[in-house]
Amino acid sequence: MDAFAELFPGYPIKNLAQPSLKAVVHVLNKLNTCSPEDKKRLLHAVVYCVLSDGVVNPEEVETMRLIAMMLECPMPVLSLPAEHAVKKRRVI
Image 1 (cartoon, one colour):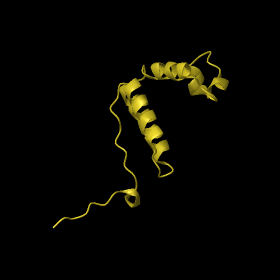
Image 2 (cartoon, helix red, strand yellow):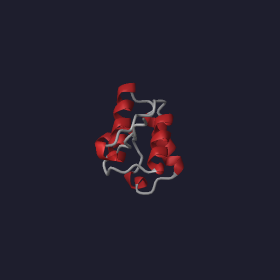
Image 3 (cartoon, rainbow, N blue to C red):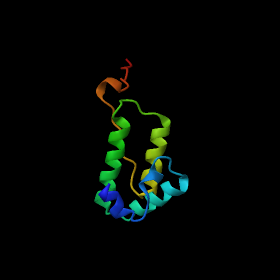
Image 4 (spheres, helix red, strand yellow):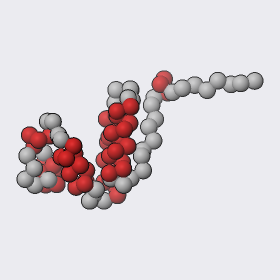
């Protein structure tokens, strides 16, 4: 909580329970002031969260795409565990 309070002074934590679009855009604009390395770490954390249950749904992908766009960073590559990968068939 201290890091959040430092980055967003005066922003009440209770507003995070059900953020409005305006609040999300405000936070992403503030995060856009971070260093490129911190932005990269943030996107990797987002990818970790999305992949943690082994299922990637369209809403998660679009949310990651939005975060990457707002942070002016390339979209990270998603790689699921091997058991979820689509196997290529060999054509003879």
